[in-house]
Image 1 (cartoon, rainbow, N blue to C red):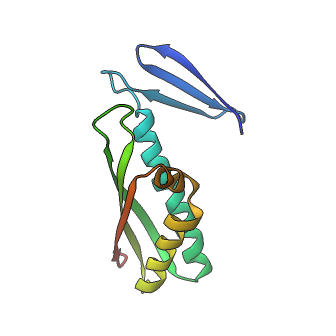
Image 2 (image 1 turned 60 degrees about the vertical axis):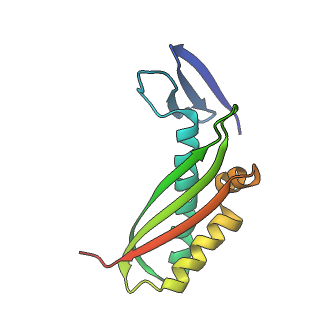
Length: 136
């Protein structure tokens, strides 16, 4: 895996993957893009949801939608790492089994999500909650 990041202007940067995909980061006043830490938090959410969707599909659960609302708390002293991350999953589906959902979330957070594991292994306290909604 390789990537390149270049400075655009101010505190705005553009990253490019080896496949030519781009992401913009902005830590300045303009807020034209997410900051690197905001991007890390979103990446943890996306990574976890990919696991959960895959696991619930294998469990033959009728998942119709999922979103995760992330809250990250940063240290007050430099380097201001994430010290706590809370995942709040909202799943939509027909007759979703609460135990299956709980198991999928636990597997993602504790075993499969590489981004989340990177954050947790750096010492952040990770918590999760979920809510199940019926379609419509």
